[in-house]
Amino acid sequence: TTARFTLDPAFAVSEVDPRLFGSFVEHLGRCVYTGIYEPGHPAADAAGLRTDVLDLVRELGVTAIRYPGGNFVSGYKWEDSVGPKEDRPRRLDLAWRSTESNQFGLSEFIDFVRKVGGTPMMAVNLGTRGVAEALELQEYANHPAGTALSDLRAAHGDKDPFDIKLWCLGNEMDGPWQTGHKTAEEYGRLAAETARAMRQIDPSVELVACGSSNSGMDTFAQWEATVLEHAYELVDHVSLHAYYEERNGDRDSFLASAVDTESFIEKIVATCDHVGAKLKSKKKINLSFDEWNVWYMNPEAPAHTDPPQEDWAEAPRLLENHYSVVDAVVFGSLLIALLRHADRVKVACLAQLVNVIAPILAEPGGPAWKQTTYFPFAAASKYGRGTVLDVRPDSPTYETEQFGTVDLLHTTAVKNDETGEVTIFAVNRSQTRALPLEAVLHGLDLTRVVEHSVLSDEDPDARNTLENTERVAPHAATGTTLTDGTLSATLEPLSWNVIRLA
Ligand code: AHR
Image 1 (cartoon, rainbow, N blue to C red):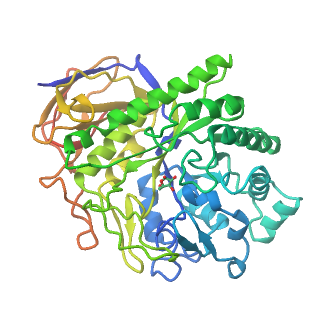
Image 2: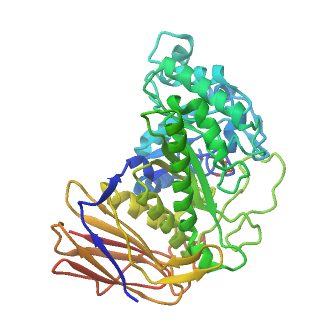
Image 3: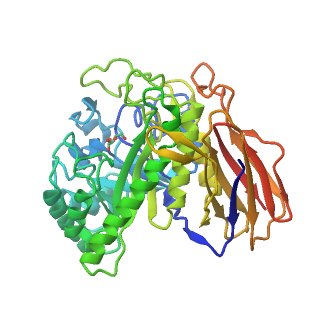
């Protein structure tokens, strides 16, 4: 009943692209307004950004930040969001049945990204708009000077270009809920022509084509194949989106959610490579897992806190899930799944960043705090940089309704190429049993356990709330040893673990 594996730097998966630790800011609910932006909040800076939230975002360690949607982008008119704030129009946001004030726009987003040390990942609207508007946005954002739109940017106070390198060609265009939803043929052609035109401005842009909205879509995998048949040589990545929630009290299956994530990734890799083979291409398409998280779509779930929604409200409370310890353990397992596939997943965005299915909650006029999911993300971003080692555990298993027989241990390891330090991320999926772990280290000059930090709780449903913002936090494990090249540890039931070796 001991889980075992071997670590050897001779067997590596890939270097980690730092953009694997990306996130997502959508004009949705209170992610932007009263989330990251709230002029008049006691902690707001001169630009109206909440410095308490900025501090938490910096500590979280997010890299690429996707913006402005999401479903919102399919009705987005970028020009509404630039220039003097008093002249910006109020618009209907069809995606979320809200009113968009445009008081936070492109320039404010770039200011936010720079203040948190991230990189922008901008989406263009391929729902209600097309090639021309994508090019206009690209010229406004990136052209140095001397054209109508680049000079307009300078006149708006942004002399320096925004230098946006990574672009999403629309969002979830396979979904019937998407404004301007398209067939795979229609979207494939539009994505290819938008990509071709954007590369005429700048051949070095990195482009993400929309994959399926989730792996359960009727058109799943065929959508990707058709889109790539049109756009293969013109794009760099295809997107994946996945959300998980506990259904009907089946916690054992929920804890195994990453089984689905890994198989989803493997199916899309196979689909991309199949199209590449058919096209006799030398190029490989990578994956941008640009929406992933735990998300309770069931309004009865205890994570739910949204009041009934009023039509066309401004910054309503939407998708404000309050995450538990068990959610954080599943969330950590999703991070492990992404790292285990770092050879093809080059970008990933935790959806979303503040208030909306987010690791950070912020009350209007009040405090901002860390949800349970904040901790696994911050640790993975801090210690998950370097080379992912190929970990093949031999683990005890358990039975699940959704996924059959599943390993109790879900794990990966990342070697920091500068310091030689290795960090093991591990989840014990058992709700009741502690899991003994033994890892043999080969070819690694490691002699001590720097830290074994655990997120677990007597009450797996515990959460950090406005009333008690610090109820849940990681604690130190005891009894973890590294002797003669063998690591021994015990993983508490239902736990996320970070074991650092030097
Ligand atoms: O992240 C919330 C929503 O989920 C996004 O707007 C959309 O792309 C997805 O369906």
